[in-house]
Length: 119
Image (cartoon, rainbow, N blue to C red; front, side, top):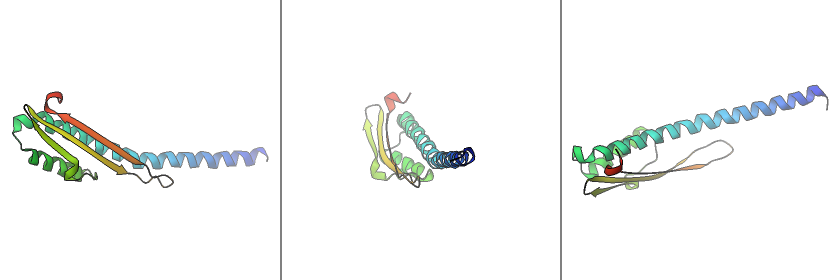
């Protein structure tokens, strides 16, 4: 193979790798960004649960609506809200499948917040 043929192969491989990185970033970054925003909502609900005097059901519903707004596959059953002496404990576990064309990973998210540790 001459030098020109080798450089064409390198160019094609470089473009494929670059395209793969771009596809992965475009599909993964929004999932992580939405999940971190959801985590902030969980932390906020835990932090102010005692002050706002919300019931566990109201907190669960607020978090469920937030998850739906962020297009996260979270069900009401996956949002556990347990009353404690000083506030609540919130545990949410969910999975997000991501299609990367040649690979389909499932991202696992697990968040746990309580009123005592939210500050």
